[in-house]
Length: 122
Length: 109
Figure (cartoon, chains in turn yellow, orange):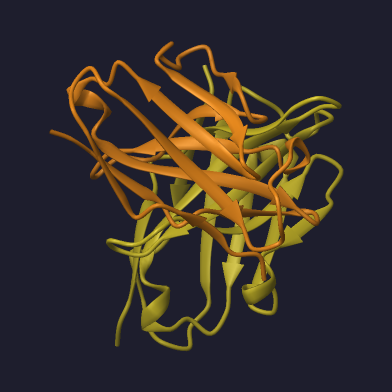
């Protein structure tokens, strides 16, 4: 059974750094083709892809936020951590992590966590 | 930055058919963009439906299908059920990154 779960603060102040942890089970981030990504969704708005870390530690960030994002993994703990610096009220959103798989023929995101709502307010 | 555009809203009658599309600001969507489609209901996490243009996950109902249509990715719902009322998002892979579409609200009426 594959599960992912996000954890972290529900409230952060403007200018602070947000640290979120995705803890997963049922797959390994050391397997070729596997990745874990972070996605966010402001209230009432669309999904936004943030970052992705691959099994080989390659990292990709959405261009508009790359200067504020850092993604890391701890394969032994089955965890992926996302940090976002200089938080602003517009960063208020539900943050999701999800599994990404790819091989020579396919490329997809399948399992998602339940999401965690982060509010940025003083 | 790549902008991915979907119809804001569509309405379909129960039992009817509706097609949602997904366009990229970078040009025609091809299989190389590996289009994925997701369904999201209020208060829930997105659920994967279609990957790599037209492949279904094991849990995807048969009435959902994916394709390329006129330079866009497309999701077709055939024999629509009331429970298909939801927001639908496409996801494209381009230049090493992923980009979500703007979302389509499907109303079953």
